[in-house]
Image 1: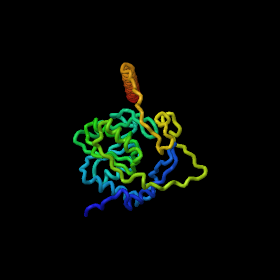
Image 2: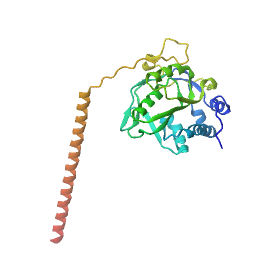
Image 3: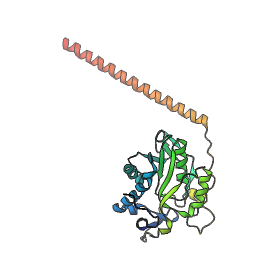
Image 4: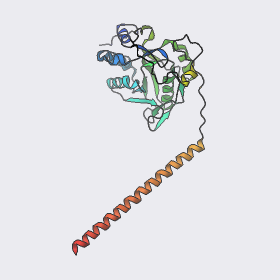
Length: 285
């Protein structure tokens, strides 16, 4: 039986929108929170079903999820398609990785994203899953690091798309030379009209609210809902000689520790052998 046609402004989309309230958070007037539909198992299942129906025909080999909400949406999709799920993590959170360059989001600068070496390779056809796309900074970095490892990004998939950033996102993808990678979203903010009911004691306690990084990328247009203009990232200069010295020092420290452990083991074994010999002699006497 063919899957029902999903409409971004249809009844399922409107049910999802109802369960995504917006909060003033991190200095942004409308921060869309997916906890709403996660609290409704039947609705959450509908979202996964829509994703499965959309991606089953695309002959994917792997599903990739973006840290952290992509870790919620990606695994059930991968299980339904019976293909592996791969994590794309924040830089420094996973061993043996390839890491993207730093990038900007609607909140400020990010150190980059990373993907474990060997997790994807040439011949893989993957989708990158996240909950929301705004400026496209995170998804763009994810696409570049996946392509660097030889895999093909068939599509980026999200629940919510913020059309406010569409032109900016398009320019970013062109600059990154990934404009051939489409972004598919289940709905856009035009039907997200549910504002959270806030207690009088509510405060914006987002970790980056008012941060210097956020201020560094904010535009001079205070009337915009998301006042972000991407600006060039600072160039990081790596002192290769210093890095090499650090690695050599670390290796030498590890060798010394290994030698000390071996010496201690040998001494312990010798002592045990001598005690056994003494006990045997005493028994014979």
